[in-house]
Amino acid sequence: MVNIHLSAEDLARVRFAFSTLWEAVASYRALRRPEKYPLHLPWIREAREALAGADLGPLEALVMMGGYPDFLTPPPTTPLPDFAAEVEHLLQTPHELVAQDIRNVLESWPQAVTPAVREGFEPYLRDPRGSLERLADTLHFYWERTLAHHWPRLRILLEADVMYRARIFALEGPEKLFNELHPALRYQNRTLQIVKHGWDAEIDLSGRGLLLIPSVFADHTLMFEPPWQETLQYGARGTAGLWCPEPPPAAEALEKLLGHNRARLLKYLVTPSTTRELAYLFDVSPSAISQHLGWLRETGLVATQRHGKNVFYKLSPIGESLLEAYGELETPLALVI
Image (cartoon, rainbow, N blue to C red; front, side, top):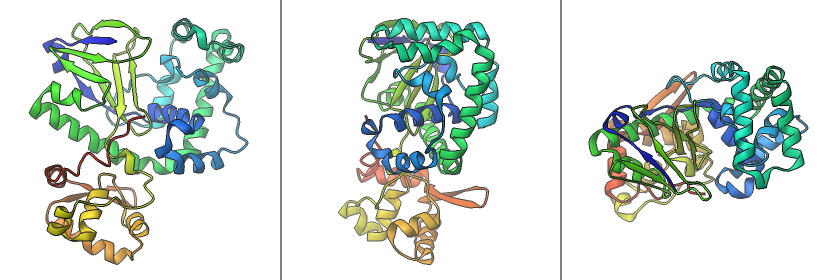
């Protein structure tokens, strides 16, 4: 059990961000262990084809034992992430900190330290500068091949999650916020309890606050070793429908209110989508989908957000409230692995 003690000052300094680099690392772990990430199998098949024959050794060396050194995912310094900037930040990691994080991993999971793990870590201890540069090149290659073209959609989903969580925090307080993040988390009496098998720790934030990072690919991850900002990564809402092969059914009462197609469309839009994606999913023409989306937008149930040439439709706060009132908001959203 990990207990994180939050003072009034810490609660005032809780902040949200998301990270392209954290997302890349979490996605690579899903790629390596597809049996643990069944919801992402469509993306995993696509990514494996795109990476066929590629050498990802510098990245593989850091994640092959399950846990990975903290320097691989430094806490984001801005709520508006840019992959190139985050990798550049990674490159600036002090070399002594690279070695310290490597040793922390080796000491924390001695039962998982195989000869292959030691061999993979050795370059980071022997030549941290060159190893970081090779890692940066590998990360850029991996990102461009597997995630860059999906990022606009993922970003909107993560932004929607941050807006939802921030609203919950502001209106209903930390207990409601933390207790909804993951079944392994529980908040009471200004203490956030995290069930982590094999981990026992008492963490006093001492006014530093807590950084919360939603993720499409991660379940929940905790970073608390100095000198890093204490950070909790959690699964974002809407992830379960991200690669959904067909629209989820809607409750009969909701269908009576909105009609069959609009009810199913509204429920699917917990995952931001374009008109073309929705037309393909529902097997109708783009013009038919546009008519339904226009009606839902006029009634305030959905909103739009533009990224480049693409316009994404997503639930508005009113749409979220409607689904929640009919008990339809949480069912397609939970990703617990």
